[in-house]
Image (cartoon, rainbow, N blue to C red; front, side, top):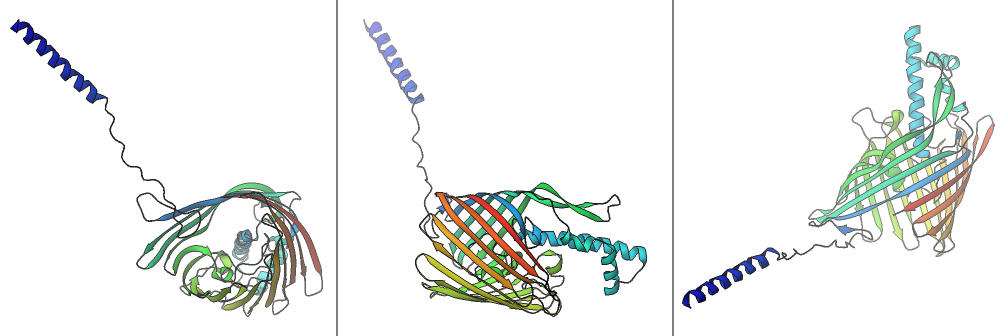
Length: 420
């Protein structure tokens, strides 16, 4: 009996031990606490804390589709005047290359007279007069924006980038068999990549690539898409700047810039210099800016007044003046002649629809007998559903030469944009 009891007890013990081990094998470990994404409302809507850091990030952008028809400002179907600098640079490069060949072949010195002779013998300087194909001009754009901010003992640290991916209708030069004469323009399509903004800010200091202070301090122009048919200033450039922001709506900025394009990028250690200030209140605001072009030794300035006339109606007026001692246009004075004015307004019918109107005029004439410029642009912006805006726009421009010849053009524009 004792042996039997001993055997039964040993078996029970083994079963108990085996059962305990089996139970241990299927025990699920407790999950570690999850760190959910936290909203960061310090810098406005859309920011959240990057997990594990005190940096706030906003991811945004838009998808846009543009359709342009007609002819404006002497260039057929220009969708975005900001691309004009590229067209001018390409045209200047073609001209300079052909002119260099002309000098080499003829053994001539680089004089104004020889350049005039070359212009008569070669069609390259007259590219602006060549016609392009009559068709729709379109652009599909995907824009990505990243904005990262955090607080430090030296103030807010910010990194911002805006990148565009475009698929554009473009115009290219058609050359002869010898590849030395432009004989026409052809319509084509092309993928394009562009960095609109890439800069770092700490406190009030900024370094990087962005739009020129000459255009941003005075708030660009009106609410129309083609707001610079009479150009009010430059855009993308390398920039080093400091902005002081007061507590009463006052701000002041000073900076140095590199310029852009073959005609306006600095070729020495002397930068372009720009400075301005603004004062914003509930009724509107005033702002002013002045810039010095170190390449051409020219200067320009602008003054702007904004008025919130009613809850629905806002108006603006802006005037610019610049010197033209050495060149008809410079990095900051990109309008024709010394004087130019811009004005217009926005009327908001409701939360979904608003109408925008802008008129602009440039004096022309002057030392270089530049043509007088005028433009009127109007559109209606309608938010079909939240985040999706459709904007039809119509534009009229006119250039009047010193001899009285006039060229008036019309253009139509339709934009679809989904922002996020």
